[in-house]
Length: 310
Image (cartoon, rainbow, N blue to C red; front, top):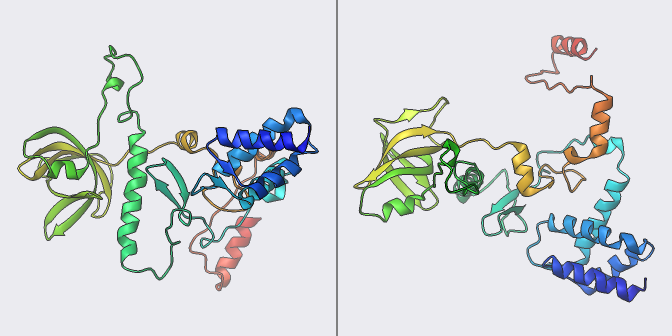
């Protein structure tokens, strides 16, 4: 296949995926594909596009660096070795992702125009941390079967067909009538001494917990809770308090794919590697031991570590 036809095929595939590849990147990718069998071109192009989309692009324009990183990842996954599965990653090197509601995906904070976390942060960082935490919990809770839109028959009367809707606090503050069966996700805090409030990025509302029933758990000031109750005359009367439902990793991966959120050389999560799975199955007795409160400057601890190790 001629180089011109390869470029045309690549450009068309990128446009169908909502991307626009630059000329230098197009030439680079076409050169990579030229020695490959034409019947395999579409397969490799799709893999390249999939890896590029996982890089957290800030615009649909694809640069040469994006294509080079995707091609490198393709080569790595093709020739991955066992010693790349175990990596020690510094806490300072773990990438910082933020959830973007408009795009419904996680992207790197640097791509979103947000500075990376710092040990010596300014005063605004604390508020930003809680806002980011709320956004992560809210989008996860909204995907739960109790809140997600029903796709079954409208004639279904099963218990799982009952759906709830989370209401932002600004909606409560903007109403003058009594609201029943209200569900609110918020931050439990005391804006005034002895007076509890529920807060989210849209506002805060005083709450009455006198008749609230708490589900099992440890509730503290500063935690996020999912509440149910009614709103009347400027006060949210809570009748039930619980924690937001957890989401299994399998469900999270179904929405966000195999993106690597923990850092390291791989662009995709190593858990999805077939080679790693085969290694684990071949070593069923392999294990990892985590130790805490180990004082290596004391001889007694060194002796105990040797006993544990051998």
